[in-house]
Image (cartoon, rainbow, N blue to C red; front, top):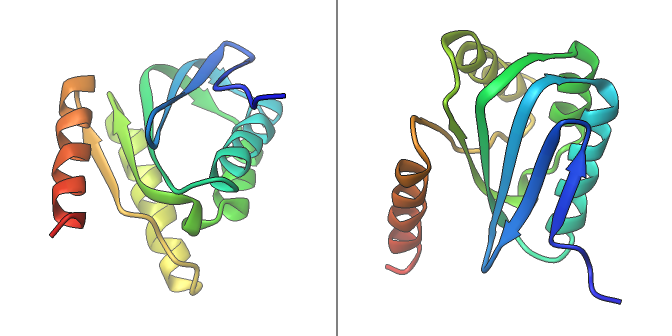
Amino acid sequence: MPRPHEWTFGTHQAWLESPDVLWMKIRGATTLEDGVAILEIYREVGSHQRFYLVTDLSEATTIDLKARDHVSWNSHTEWFHGAIYIGAGLVQRAVANSMSFFHSLTGKTTLPQHFVSTENEARALIADERSLLDR
């Protein structure tokens, strides 16, 4: 039985785009249950290959602190090439950067993370990253 390449959880969606981009569209609030689902998707995809994570936060509202901590502390950096956030607001950027900084202080490896405004910018960034890997 083939593995699914699309997921729906709560008001959110995720899909895997070949060869290695996991897209997530976050709409509204993110609950602890959503955080558990997100981590399981990361684990499923990451157990087969490394991937770029592109998360569209333009319609996101709030994230439960337990959900954020669950995903943050249980993700494995070896699953990812990097993380790109579309439409992150100032508070979302600050939280992501502070979590990355805190992880670095505790010795946990951190992911390269980028913030962009559009899907086209995310795609261009991935293309740039791939060109660096090809050198």
